[in-house]
Image 1 (cartoon, one colour):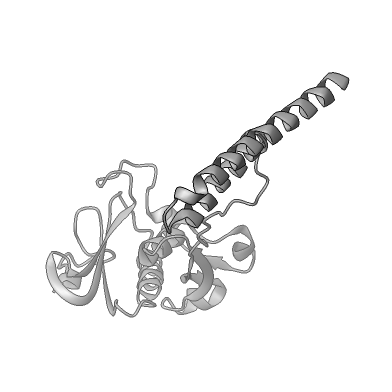
Image 2 (cartoon, one colour):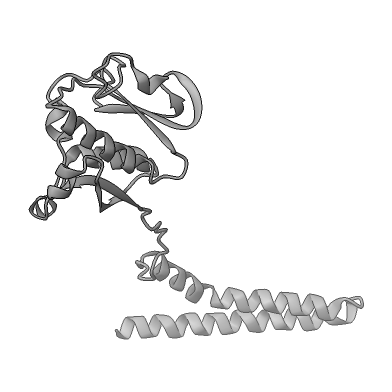
Length: 229
């Protein structure tokens, strides 16, 4: 502690002598300086003052360099975008008596591909709570999801503005990529109603064509593929 105080006093005395000698030099030079002398003197004095403060500035910089900033850092947060959709299921006695009677439940799509997502939710079937309320679909058993898919790992393809392979604005063609079996015309009709109503909730789809794995009209027992005509 005593040594540090003595050293500080010694440096202060040395700085005082250093400044005194430079000021004396400036006084001797003043008569010979041109009109810019005051500016030159000011510049030299500024340099001398900075030289005297150099030790303190360096110490401050060193302390700051080793410190960790606790200031809050800006973070870019993008709110998640979701898309509410409806999925239409059959329900209770009403759908048994009227094969086209379907009823909506709400889902939230995490992707802008809302039509595809809505169909995936239809194939997945109603939730346990929805089942207790009477919602059902035979699609969960009619579509053999355990069988290999003809289009990667997807259950179906959905082609907009096409009737089969023919361009047709407003018509969407769904083709299953896995085998399907029909338990009867009633189940086929209910599945058809569920799919069509689920897809036509979207304004860009006015007509729906449903094809099986082989490209034939789903539920068309006539073999005429009338859905493609």
